[in-house]
Image 1 (cartoon, rainbow, N blue to C red):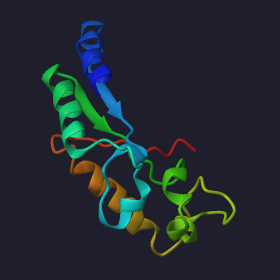
Image 2 (tube, one colour):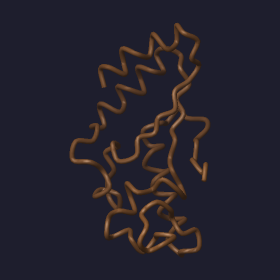
Image 3 (cartoon, rainbow, N blue to C red):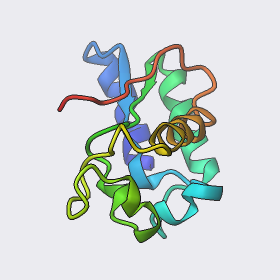
Image 4 (cartoon, rainbow, N blue to C red):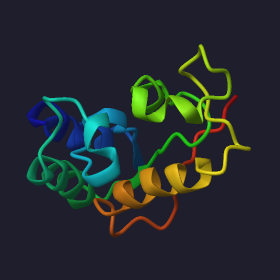
Length: 127
């Protein structure tokens, strides 16, 4: 995280007004999503340090949580395979699956836990 923390003042100096954080499997997810996180994911303290450093520079911190596409970091795991739009593909969540909304909501809720100051969220959907 130190490299990014060192970048925040530079980005602010160069005119940046915000930072989009796309954490994916680098957040220390718990519960249902525990197996989604990387073994070397950021700790809760590191996440708070990164966001705090950006906010200290006056940068608007916007969490990006993929909700339908680009979900390979979740859908590649066997326990989430039933949520795939195409069974052989790990990219997209099937919006018609009865558990898809709850899964997307869990991703959002756990991400927002680390972004208590967030007033907006980017939900992806660039498909």
